[in-house]
Length: 433
Image (cartoon, rainbow, N blue to C red; front, side, top):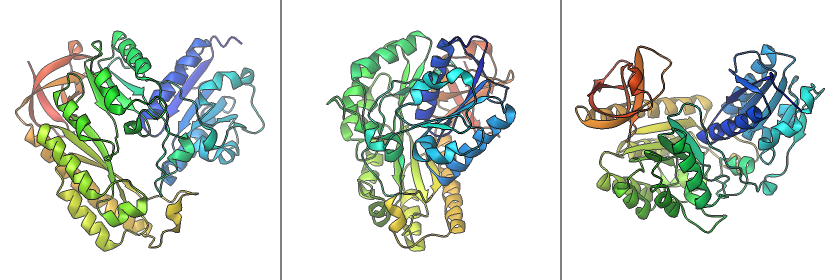
């Protein structure tokens, strides 16, 4: 069917992997003749790519779905993503939803549009997580500056608090050859930086017998791209070989994002994590030994079942002593069908919030300290497309966000700058040569 002149709008919640997948889904609509419009505009089709990592994410997903329905009650409403996979009937019961697609079908939306005829109830296409086995290539493209490249999907770890394996299926990946080709094409289209995304990217190779170390070595040779960033990678999978390679690579940025989740071995064991805090500390020390200027971001969950006041204080002190740059802090969220629900010692929600705020204050101080360590230094910055005509922002290779007066010739360019203090927005001010 020809959909020329019809408008489609997209919105994405959650992780960078979702953003890469939304971008690829959007291209399939454009190939069918749709015109893409903003999510706040009136559209004929709304596609909501949801997240379900916490109860708050579920609530946000429902709110966004209802927002789309209010904007145009006659529109065809499609819901995909983790919330759609985990709770399809709950999503389908929202009045106005037409199509709910699980993980195996979300890239096939255009096959289910039915001429955009509204359904009396949401039509669900879903399967058990044990049958999620496809790898769909995905990369984001739009701002010409950075692209999120999907290199891996799924997870075999089953941490006690997490539903992602049930939303994404088992760990799987494409070949390194195919990913190198995608990266090369992205660079030829004007992309200057690629961020490697997935659910558990360090586990790369389950489908092909290759390794993540093999992948970064191959991508480091892609000459059409200036920079490659590694997104979140498990500490037990971030081995010394990878760290040492990044320290001498041509394109891999000195930027690591490593989930810790808890700073005591007791809580790590309750979480079912595959490392202890001593291993985590060794990873940080190794990075700083070889790359003292590297940015290290760390995920932490506050208030996990079984985390007593004493254990939280021990965790806080451990994190405080780490030479890291920033924390991404989340309150523990009860998720159905997870074994963490059986753990005794439930932390009250208000206490979880207090712990989150305390860790966020620590994060703010660590980020400020990291920025000030680089004050006065020269760094190469990739400037991004700006909606403002007065200011423009960009990122150093070690993930310092900078800001300066807007100049059109800076957009999508890498320029040598001098860092000169933190401005009121929290970014580093820079002087451009």
